[in-house]
Amino acid sequence: CIVLSALWSSASGAEKWRHIEKYSRLLYLPIAVALLDSPVWRRRALAAFALAMLLTLALSWLHAAWPFAWARATRENLPHSHSIFKTYITQGMMMSLFALLACTLALNRARVFERALWWNRPPWWVAVALLAAINITALLHGRTGQITLVANVLVVFFFGLGGLRRVLFLAAAATVFASLFFTSEQFRTRLNSVSTELQAFREHKAVTSSG
Image 1 (cartoon, rainbow, N blue to C red):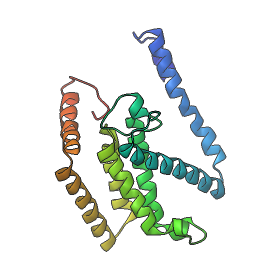
Image 2: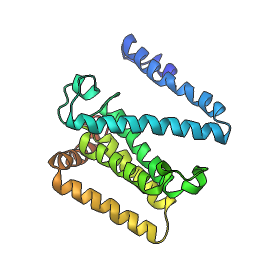
Image 3: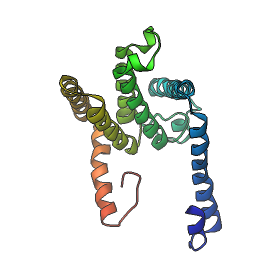
């Protein structure tokens, strides 16, 4: 569809090629699906993703205390953001998916891990999910990660929990949200800007990631 629409688009040739090159990466999806045809390789892929995001999470928190030079946020001169390898939008979205994965591992440990080790116990993954959520809401500049985090919280709430655990999870999420809202001016500002950008998008004034 991208290639066909480029035939009659009024965009420049460079802009057309930029979009084709970007969305051509979707062609990796059928290759990945074909390779992940066994539970062993699916677990390995999840483990690789988890390790990559754990590294990103640890470096992002380190950057909050020590803004080392090679981090993406330092190179782009973003004083209130702590993105590491990619843009804050990409890190926010991937970190929200990682928070969902951490919640899933905490809730379904017996079905995911073959042996009980210190690193696969539920409290560890609950702590990781909280650190990832705070990273998105307090340490990153963008709002897209916050929106995807809300979506993933709803996924856990509706599909991963039941009964008393659902009530406790909702209470914990509300407590974290309220704490960030009342203690972080940056979080309040970004949250308010989401509604502003949505209104601007509805009025066809601007197109933003949140809109």
